[in-house]
Image 1 (cartoon, rainbow, N blue to C red):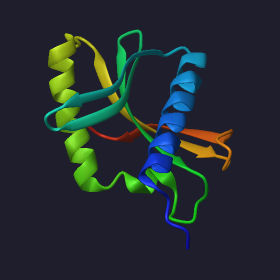
Image 2: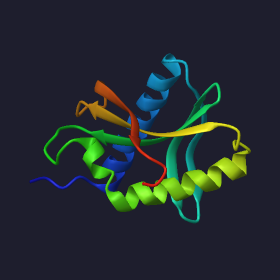
Image 3: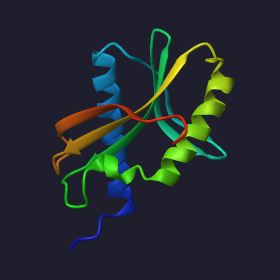
Length: 128
């Protein structure tokens, strides 16, 4: 089995995040932050539609060989994302907003073209 280089994984992730952001924007969301980093970690995308703020974990794949992309959002990662989101709500002054956690699975062709995007709304709760 061929090992994917770190650069290739980064490129795949960046392409997936770009596709996910465009997909969300085409459906009325405003992407207000990308790759927001804190000491605790990183949130791929933060999008908003009205008073709804969505924290989005993007998973990009070229195949299902290692399972569905959303399966990679394991319990420890969900807990970490919930903690990060709480800090971001405070930091960005979004306390008055409803919060939701979504996952976006992006399937890419080997050449980087988007094959399919799956938006999983309310992928997990604030308690992870």
